[in-house]
Each structure stands twice: as C-alpha cells, then as structure tokens.
Length: 448
Ligand code: 5AD
Ligand code: SF4
Image 1 (tube, rainbow, N blue to C red):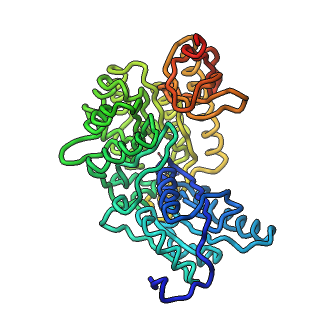
Image 2: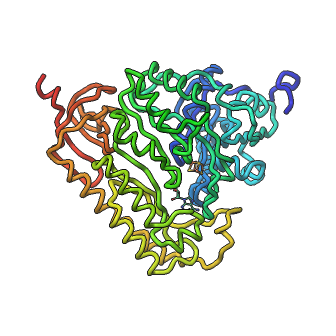
Image 3: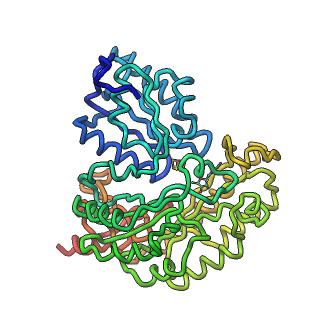
C-alpha cells in the first residue's frame, strides 16, 4: 500500500458516502459499522446518486445476488454521466469482494476499491489509496479482530443487530460461506457484552445476535444461552433474538433458555434445507430429517408457541421428484411461521458445483412454486392463529398511512397499529390477520 501522504491525490478525498447492503443480516450489520466508521472520519451520509463514495456491500450466496453488483456498477456510472457529474468512487465490499478480489476491477474498471468482510476497518487507508489513483484492494482475513479497530456504536433504532460469531466450519457442499467468511470464530464474551450495552445506551430495545452459525458461539466454555442470560440482565433491553442456527449446535441449554428467559423471543430460524435424507447427505448437512423433527419437538415441548422459520433449497443436483415430495412432507410435519426457499445455484469452488446431474430449470421453477405456496399457506395459518390474542409489539417505524406505526410481534410478524411512539413496547390485540402482516389495536393507547 502506498502512503497517501507521499503521493499527490489524483482526485479529491470523498466528503459524502452511501452504503448499499445486500444479502443477509450480517451484511446489514457490517454496512452499519462501515457507515459509522466513515462518519467518524467526517464523511456525511447522503443518497446514493449524490454520493462521492458509493460502497456496495455485496452477497455471493447465489449467482443472481453475486451478478447484481456488476449491473449496479454500470448503473452508478451511467447515472453520474447523465447528471454530468464525476463518477463516484466505487467500493465493493462484502462476500463478492472476498470471493472475486482483484478480478472485480479487471471486469469492471469503474471499481476503485475492493474490501473483504474481515478488512473493512482499514477503509480510511484504502480510500486514501484509491484517491491517489490506485486500485485499492484488501481481502486479508487478519488475525487481529476488526472489531477492536471500529468506532463505538452510534444512535440506534429500537431493533439492533450484533454480530457475535462469524464464519462456518460446516462445509455444506452447496455453500460459499466457509470460503467467503472463513473459519468459525466467536467474539469474546466481554466484547459482546460491551457492545450490547453500547447499543442499549444508543437506544436499542431489541438485540438480534447474529452469526452464520450463531448457536455455535462459545467463549471459555460458555455457550450462547449463557450470553443471552447475561444480556437479559440489561434493564433497558426488552427483547433478544438470534439467527442463524444450525441443528447440530442446538444445545440443551439454548433450548432451556426458550423456557426460562422471558426476554428471549419465541422465534427460531433453524434451516433444515431439504426433506430427503439422501439429499441431506449429499449436502453434507450431518443431520437427517428424523433428528431435525425430534429437535423441533423438544423446542416446542418447552415453548409451545415458538415460531419456526427455515431455509430450503430446491433442485440440488440429482434431486428426484420423489425426493422433492419428501421436502414438502417435511414442511407439513414442521409447520412454519415463515420460511425462505431458493433454487439451487451452483457456486464456484463448492463441491456441489462439480457434481453434475443438474435439475432442469423448468423443474426447479415448478418445485419452488409448489414449496412457496405451501409455506405461504402455513404462514397465513400461523398469522390467523394470532387473531384475538393480545401480545407485546415493539414499535419500529412509521407505517404508510398517517399516524400508523409498524412494529413486531414476539413471533416476528409485522403488526400495524394506529398511534404509539417508535421504541415503545405496547400491548396489542390482533384484529386482522393477512398473509404477510397483522393489524391490531394498542391496548394502552386505546385506553388513553
Ligand atoms: N444455492 C441456493 N441456495 C443457497 N443457500 C446457500 N447456498 C446456496 C446455493 N448455492 C441458501 C441456504 C442458506 C441460505 C442463506 O441460502 O438455504 O440457508
Ligand atoms: Fe450472502 Fe452469506 Fe455473505 Fe451473508 S454471508 S452476504 S448470505 S454470502
């Protein structure tokens, strides 16, 4: 890296910026932290079309997500030309940056800077380097933690993300995450607790603990449930959630936490991916369908109302019609409050990408449609089952209509109510249930 002070800048340092995050919640967290870092450097957040620096925080999980970055880069360049202004400095961050590295500016010369998910604390140096006219690149996975180098958490909305674990050692055969995010690491107990306190001081009332395998979090013999128990002691923190979990890391203590800790919300995102044991084996999932169902039973035994969410892949190489039917049966047996489903997308460098035996696109389309219809049915049924119930809703933001607010139920459903202030936790009686959201009446407010 060239020292910025010895080389006259070939363009001014950016004064304004915009971060666009794609993909998972961990990317949203990284995006927020990059924004905090840039603000600390004196840059001002503005709309993307106005920004001197645009940071695309990318996702590599499926081909469509990964390709999106290239169309975005083209659009940014064109919009700047159309407005007669200089092309913004374009930075690519996130998992595409990690996976493709120097290939990105080769393919898209408008890109000035590439930074991986473990190196973004170095953004200020990289920006200076890019301003000096060089292509700046950092996709190291340094041993020293980026978290030590990032500024303190800033003003928050009611719901905040907190990454506690990164990376994955599971090596499911379809997945790029072990390559883009590296080996499983857990942030130390004290660091996580301090950040949670800072988030609460900054206004957070709900914290979602994040990790690619968040329930594998461990530090000095303690597990995720110990951490949840500790955070539940923070008086102003009302709610705790965690995502994403792996069935094999679902410890007894974590299951018990769903019974014992009131602040832990009754929601579990626990992907099973497929309903055929042969496919699960080919995916290297190291669990079968029966053990997954047993696990769900155990969780429901301690927390009967828990909302179950999941992820599914249809059309994994070699998946037969009968095997896909097994996925539908598994979904029927599980009963979801919500779930995500995707067509299999071969990813470079993963074992499944070279398995052959691809499922034809039309077959995948049809399977996805059938699966999504079933999941939508279950979600609607779950929503209808809350009709007439009263539950606590955390108000997160304004709704579309004047005076309307949008909040979340304990089961992560969106609930529309009239009135209330953002950040309030109000008791709401559910009066209408749609396929994707609920409407309710706030008790306290109605009485006032
Ligand atoms: N193709 C399709 N879906 C994938 N996922 C991960 N890798 C792939 C892939 N190659 C899905 C899994 C995972 C979710 C985040 O994305 O279901 O749980
Ligand atoms: Fe996408 Fe996975 Fe990267 Fe998240 S960690 S952005 S889901 S590739």
